[in-house]
Image 1 (spheres, rainbow, N blue to C red):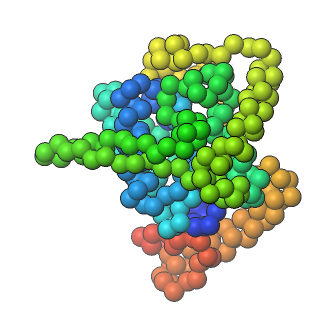
Image 2: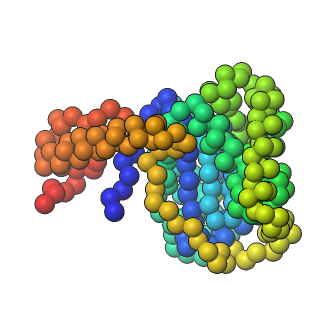
Image 3: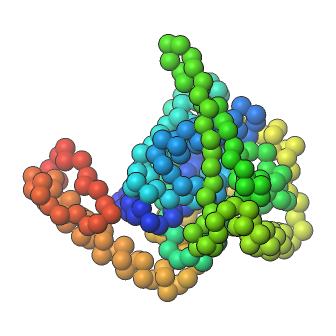
Length: 288
């Protein structure tokens, strides 16, 4: 299956998802893991100018709703995933690849989808049957930061010949779709929507119990869920069938144009014109 085409739109929000190798619980939360992830996330948010709207790090995957105004999402994700992998491997005394595959980045199509994506991330731990309320999740999550509107400071350890420590600030931005100027104003709109979403998730579980914080913290990092949900990579994030149909047509045409330009480029035609919001591939070989 060919890799999905990256669309580097500086004006669009994207829902980024990454899962660990074989869905192992390698990101199981504890004090060190939470502080480490916070430091890495804050450092590269500052470095690459990323706007973050919501995030949650579960034991075997994470979601971030963000925007990359500099069209450098790939650089941010490369740095974020590299540093988390290096530090988790060192912490768990393991070797090899931490992540199961490349990150998924879904373009958030419409304004209403921005709210849906944020609710999905905030309530993710509840949706997976882990805790009954997002606040109970012991790992890194943005619920409290959305509620209080505060910036959080984390430590980033620089491993070199002389160990150093830098402090970085993790900031959240209000959703553009809501037109709010602050997180406090945004929370007044969102808190009722979050409660409604949580009620739906509880009803869908039909009174089944949640795993709970105590049992989560006792899980083994090398364990894996009995059932792993596998689904094809969606081309975008939207709840509108009309918007989904439109985006699929747009994506198909964009990909066709890109493939044609890529073939000419790799055959030596370095002046080949690529579609807007895409990057040329590496020209290290001539295709058959």
